[in-house]
Image (tube, rainbow, N blue to C red; front, side):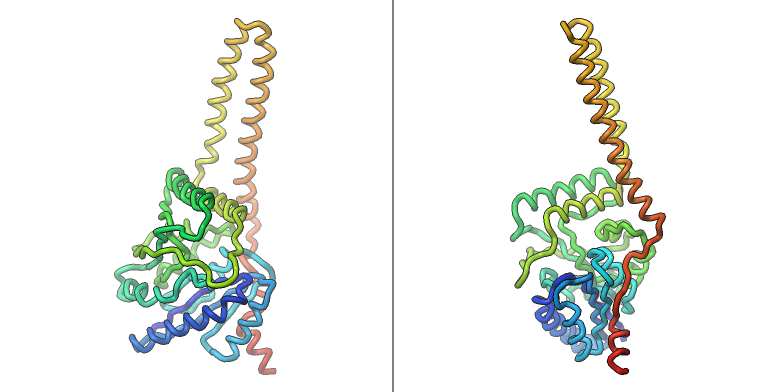
Length: 315
């Protein structure tokens, strides 16, 4: 039998979880009947939800032995949820997907067809449109991918998602990258392997709203840039050249202009200050990331698991 682990990071998903479970079990049961040698485990990760997500995990675990879960001691973020799911998965193949049904379970049979015989190491979806998103958010998303691919040696495909069907070999390679500051889209690309991209139209959530705010996505994009590019570190050199050139030009102009020396002095001071602040800020951000890595803090802390829950119920 081949085991497929379905990893599902969750944060405040009580409204959609029953719908997701119904859809995922319908698809996986059909796959089991079709292939005959497939079994599944559903590994949910509760990322410090404030609603009844954990209670729903209890209910699912009570009636389905295939359901496993990890509940964090607090909110660590989706990246930690993905890492925890991959690390604790037992499958020969591992799927990462969201519970909000924007990653349609109906894609799983086709994904498996690409990966099962080793033709590909990973099958993933790639959005062909951003229907349902605001124009501003879509514009920033496209610009992020353009900038990222220009300044990084790791290519990140525009529209590629975390919805992935991976071989155990690829999962193990991803887990080798155990850094604290994680950016999965970059990690999935960095490890390489043969990937099949499946185009699809964006699907809106059936209920509830996304927990990702514009500010949260902006900070996440900065994580990606700093995780896979050192180009911003060279920005200070670029600023130094510009400020030095402007300072020299203003100095020459001050020799011929009335009271030009005062203007030149003020302008040079402002430009130099801007340069110093920008350089210090960029270096500080990278230094902060390095500081967090040297602490060797765990990527997540589990407060409860399905094993501890079931053991407690037996007592």
